[in-house]
Amino acid sequence: MKIKQKLKKELSQYSGLKNVVLFSSCRNALYILLKSFELKSTDEVIIQSFICDSLPNAIRLAGGKPVSVDVDSRTLNLNADSVKNKITPQTKAVIFVHTYGNPSGIKEIAEICKKHNLILIEDIAHALGAKCDGRLAGTFGDYAVYSFTKQMINFGGGAILTNHNIDKISLLRDQFRNKGSLLVYIKRLFASLYETRAFFISKILIDIARKKSNLKQTNDLDKHFHCTSIEAYLAFKQLPNLNDLILKKRKNHQFIQNKVNTQKILADCEASHNYLSFIFNEDVESSVITKTSFLFLPPWSGSNISNRIIFMPNNLRFSLRKLKLMVANYHKIYNQTLIINKNGTKQL
Ligand SMILES: Cc1ncc(COP(=O)(O)O)c(C=O)c1O
Image 1 (cartoon, protein in one colour):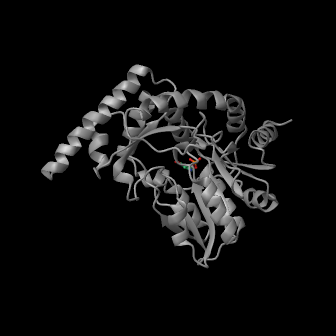
Image 2: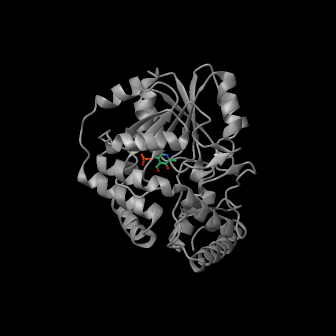
């Protein structure tokens, strides 16, 4: 069996979803999925405002209208009340992002979508293997979109997983036969290394790249649509380790959670803890924080909550000493920003 067939079978078995279509990335997967719905310009797609720009871009390019909803500040996910308020006769679909690998809130959103007859797309880019009520993230909605570069080391790659028919999706994807550029694969590999292994080296490179280039460009859709055999091979090889990785990441998360205010995970959910998020109570400038410490990255911008969050990948190589350092840094920065706020100045 060819490697792409093997990966599709493995992903299908892992998730319990019948059909899998492979792509160059999660964002391109979402774009083609939305294209398959033949959206009109008035058709609305609800998505959280705390999100990578590539996703609202995919909605726009597919012909629809993204409707932003702020996330629940405790879980960093959509919550039922805010989604209900945004539903109109034009609403076609809801995209639920399992932010940083946390499925909290998905059951309620699935109920609302069922009630209002809306298509539910789950973004499980960070969350393959996460569960809610014993059920895997990605199995609550109609479609799940996945990225091979967030929980795995890879040059790119993504997928749509679903029990629905995929003929139209596959046909649409196959209209595009372009090849990816070498630079895109290299960029993706470094971003993926940062997320998973070589935190310090990749962080330096990412910081340099961010200073030199327009960050928005990295959030564009890919020009190519197909998953390569190497990407499929790497994903296939890493998939069996996913559950073990999640257990190890959970330990890091628990250590941090006992000491600082982090993303709330509801009791019936088991997150994949792909990132360690730190949430500030005060509305402080995340730029001040990220400038002061090498460890942290600014989160997705554009949401009311963006200035209160910092995050980093939940890297398995982080030792207890490093985790303690992160907590100490958090407290130091938090205290500094409190002083700044009291004095009414935002300069350090
Ligand atoms: C939650 C989430 N979904 C999707 C994506 C896009 O994934 P990809 O880079 O595979 O297109 C990102 C990228 O940052 C993301 O954070």
